[in-house]
Length: 511
Image 1 (tube, rainbow, N blue to C red):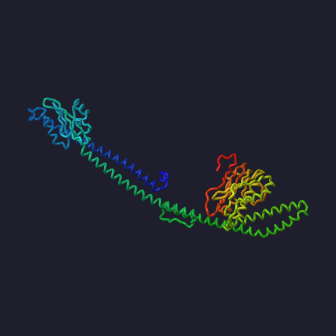
Image 2 (image 1 turned 60 degrees about the vertical axis):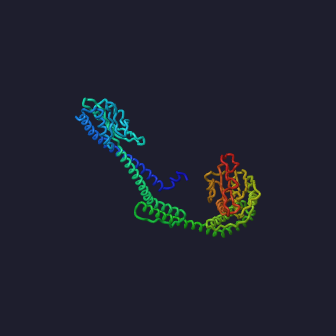
Image 3 (image 1 turned 180 degrees about the horizontal axis):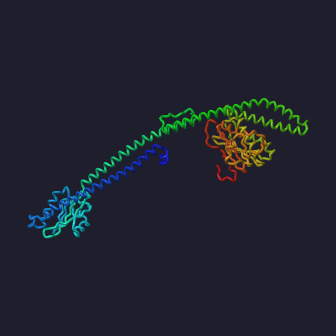
């Protein structure tokens, strides 16, 4: 399963990940802002404290340097004493003093802790200056730390200037910021976890009713029209449940009405067909008697008798088809299965249809590609399918050839009936099996069909667990394919013959 499919396959997952992602972004931004403000505050406070401390120490050192007790002492020695006094305060600050003969540096730091720009400024200007620095320790294993460097000049008794630099490491402040960063990170992680839990619980509250609605809709679609959703409260989800229940009730009522109407229609067709059978039989017998003596009648009456006889036969065929359709609709149609050679059935129907084809100037041929074409079928229904397909092809062939092909494989037997007549549009391939459908409504039936032949043929094919499919193009003819399993209890997935004719020169795709 790909990430895209996983993402769009779960609403709770999308909500949870979206909530976590946005929460993490907000927490990071808030943490960064908080740490920046805290760092700025700590650094500013350290800067002010360092300036105040340096000012006091400078005043003390300046006073000591000019003290009468040190007038007889060499300047270098006096500066050494001041540096030793600074070492006593090493926990707070360190000093670097530029003496007359050498540089005096407090214990534990290096002179590189004083930035060059501060040195240049102290040497060229008077006053006290401060700048950030990196405190470098004499211990190589100790990591340099940020701090403040404050520079000024001590003035001796004779007016000489001795630059002095106060180094204030930010050891305590750095540790404080490190602890604060850990606290912010831990708090952020805890908040994200809490938000994820809250998002999961809230999403579950919203998604659970939606899932119930989806499951109810699926059960309704599966035929469980009595399924209803539980309504709790008066919120939007309760409104959804009420709407679903109202829709289900309306759907159940409509389907019951349609089922009742369909049952009445089926019963009406069946009853009318049965009731018409007796008077039609009487009319047909009388028509046959009159038709046999037509030679003794005048030409006009004889022609009328022929037309009457033809239409009565057509009416009888239509009535039989209506009875058969009513049996399909009622689910009363059953198969009488026999181990039958389908190729022989096709050959018999081709031979019985040959006189009609010759009368219409149609060349009717058969191609049997396999010797073994046996299958477990109902011969009467299969012959009816073949008769409908072949006569339909002859009727619409417009004096062009009609070819019937039989082929078989291990699992199925297939028959195709190909004509090159009027054909039909590609979008009508499924409609040709509708009851009383015509490709051209203005076209009259030559062989007097009932308009139900293809519909009955499709139902017969379905009874055999087979397929009846059609292909057609206007002006290029049509091809019908019947595919039957050798054993209706064994499912098959393909046909030995293609539904699209391979002999059509205008085709681009062949299957």
